[in-house]
Image 1 (cartoon, rainbow, N blue to C red):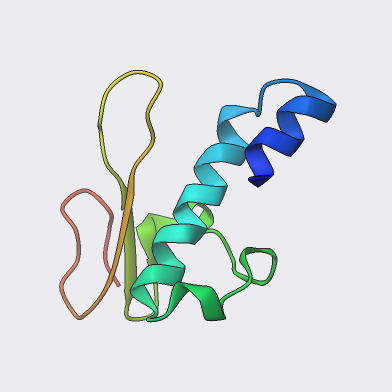
Image 2: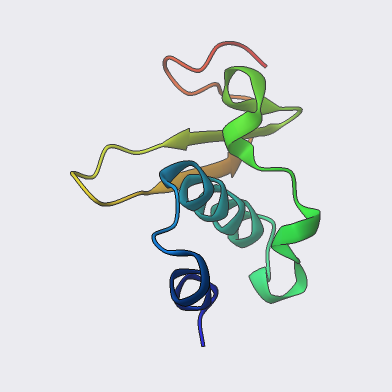
Length: 86
């Protein structure tokens, strides 16, 4: 059973901040390569990165509509518009 289903069964709806953290970590794990190699409990959430940057890594939450979350993470020297400087 998926973690969100277990959470909902035991504790009720997942708070939006926890969902955002989870999806940000999932995006980072995929950007790092093989997402199956990365344990989300051991990754820092890109949602907490100052200015959306951590070294050469960048992250941004994408506007996708109500009741949906999306994150994108990428490596590089460029800085996402509105996320500050690296």
